[in-house]
Image (cartoon, rainbow, N blue to C red; front, side):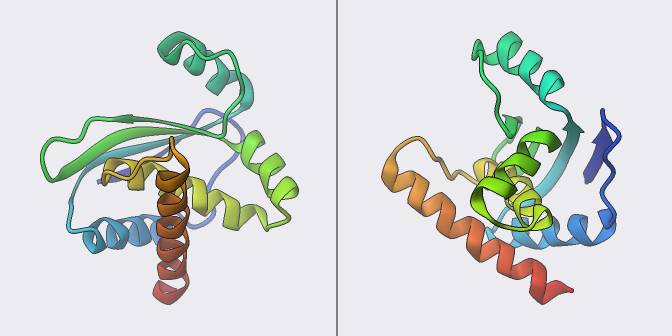
Length: 139
């Protein structure tokens, strides 16, 4: 089950479509959907989590906590809407596109994709693009 939670004024306009898309992404990776919680927040909220749980003193757009067991993926994905807005401007893409990229990024981590090295990062970007294309097909 995919849940959307809000710790800021932001609200997704199309929760059902995004939930259905994420379910399709999970299936396309041969995984089973467990409980995945998305928490949309601001920079301050996510910065506190970054400090407390990861001991990182910087801003980030997404932090995911992976509770996957076996083939059933589960976890909590925290997204700073402020960072996503800034990144969309920096990358010259629509906010909605950047938001979907960050949303799917967490699920891809749970599916086993990493992004720490250059090769892993390239594969992650490729998978993000592949899964973003699924969103348009599903609509």
